[in-house]
Length: 386
Image (cartoon, rainbow, N blue to C red; front, side, top):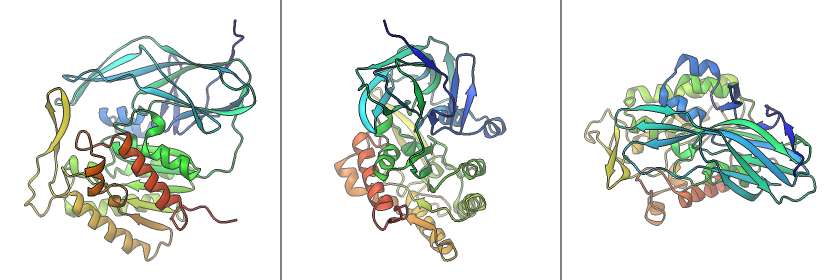
């Protein structure tokens, strides 16, 4: 019989979350703070920010067995087949060491056409990882990037302590569902997680599915995060929601960057334009879900002849112009064309299964190229020599 040691779960061993909410069952990691959620309680935003993309438990221990009790909230889309259970990734000293899924949990049923949802309560689950090496080691449990997860209890068969500060830089990233990790099969397969591992940095991922919309409160929340490196991937959600016209876009970008610079005046800041998406390269939004043969795809409904409307091509031109203008007075501001991460030739080689989101192969390609161009030698986030 295992002699379990229960360790309180707190901010000392949870990384990648901006806030931990105490619930009746345990702790709920949030990627946006309370004041944002209270001021703008939009259901889609609240769902996205509570899905813990990039959030992980990190601790040092000699344990050979680890148990984690969780209460997941699984999402089911009305009219579509049930999605597979989301995955928890175990890393030992930075290397993959196991995976698990949590059965049971709450079920959130979403009607995408009506933009409504209903939650049915369910039971918590226990994850177990055993057969681990008995010597002291760094252990990370990455929570599902696409499944709201309450942390209930952590048990090990040896004492746990926080991982000591290794001097790794903190990379704060904001983007759309692609940055959030949509269509990736497990949490360390999202492109930001892959890029962070290659870059040797600590990730704080504010990729918010459907909600990279230049919201001022997101910029302010990012400004409150201690970060050594910041990137913002802008454009696809602005187009596919048909949120604004050309006249509004440039001032919104300037305002977002101004807020970041008010809080982080000299931090290396990278603006990334959209990756290739044939649906919206030259066709404005709105983008609507399209259900065919029990499969989800999308179609763009905007008028390509309207010169006031935004497309991905227009947004790339605008972001290149804006960052070049600002960089004349800001040596730490940089620009990366998203087509360098995933362009038209990549779509032919590693297509987007639903026409919008990359699969694991696409995430891997984007993450590797981002790491090479941004964290690699000569890149804007390259580590200082010596």
